Length: 520
Ligand code: MSP
Image 1 (tube, rainbow, N blue to C red):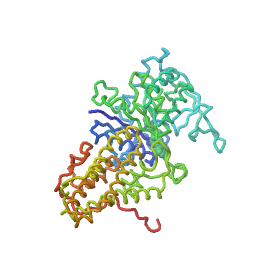
Image 2 (cartoon, rainbow, N blue to C red):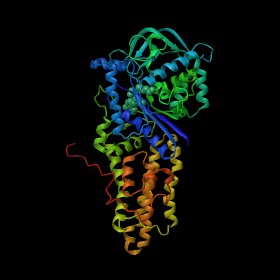
Image 3 (cartoon, protein in one colour):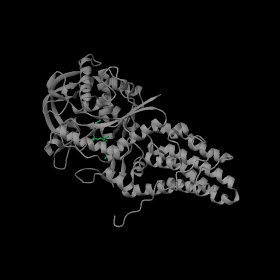
Image 4 (spheres, helix red, strand yellow):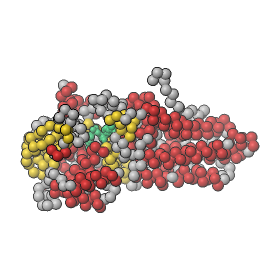
């Protein structure tokens, strides 16, 4: 069975989960669910990034010990995963013993190897330069900008501070050619293409060696054989992707999942994943992942989202207000994946009432109600299909080929657009065939039409279920589709609906319209 290993970034535990966290993990969840339904052996990893100065400071601000602090905040990300119905297989925390062992092992492997120029990969020096705690990143003087109060800011807008301390360095500069060759040999490694080009020109511009240890605080993984130093939090964090599949235990069964098929990340953390990470891995003699996709950022009603502006979007509130699946649908349908997007309540209501309630919801409700009323509550016999009936249902099932391609490219909005073109066809088919008129004039044909429509709905629900698993489960349940028949092998006509199967009762709308409350 072909394997599929997909990962989310691990989230800093300095903060409450927000829409950005929900978005990144949702994209991975949809891929994991799609691949599972398609018969693949899937591993889906998420977790929390718990070391570093940023987390240490957040704990100190609350007056709590960092371990107790991370124990508490990490739970919030599990709650988000539950609230969003994320189907992860493993939730890693970087403070776990398995991860500390893995970090120390990758450090040793890097230190043991040599750079392509025949030099040691890790050497001891002193770091003197700028550091942004918010980004947990080092910046050169040339990269800095001046803030409104004359302060120095990183290009991300984060405040920087001057740091001078003994530090181990990774000889990144020697890995430039190997990285460029790797990008060339693996054209799909970085997506979208515009981001790939950015990374390539950054690497072509020359790489500085990277400081990979800190000595002025304690909250991190100790460097092997030098307890004065803790490992740079990004080296620690990136290693989570291999820890979770068994590194460094030779013979761990989970290692079959490496190299990962996809690291999903936001555009802000692409450089860490597409430059530093493959260089660390090559230096340690481990294969780099197959692909890194950098998605865009959400703004809130046109404004950058930030705690100081007080416009952070709480995913728990949106799930409560609009329902889980409409929120999931909106996030992946509204914006071409890879681009930035703007969140607005008007836009989500528009999607919910249009695409979901009117288009998909109405289709199901109309058809299932007609079957319930006119066919004794049972899936009617199909009798004889017309060529159009066959083309209509087979067309839906056949779109799996195109969907596979779109999912491999992470084109979620196009995948949904494609499914919704078939939803539109189905609604047109209802209007053209007018089964309510056939009831008297040609009841046999009415049964064929309703059977065809039931098959169309079942196929549409299968294709949609990675995006909206709960709502589609409700449709399958209403139609009494056997639990074992809810995978892509059951796409197509007559592969899942037995004639004469009783519906589970009077059909209920799956996507009720959203009605704005008075004064809301
Ligand atoms: N801990 C690091 C990742 C280490 S991975 C080895 C980190 N954590 S984070 O919690 O700050 O961010 C996690 C993700 O949230 C990133 O992919 C980031 O792009 C995403 N988002 C944060 N704000 C966002 C929006 N406003 N919109 C969309 N995604 C955003 O970085």
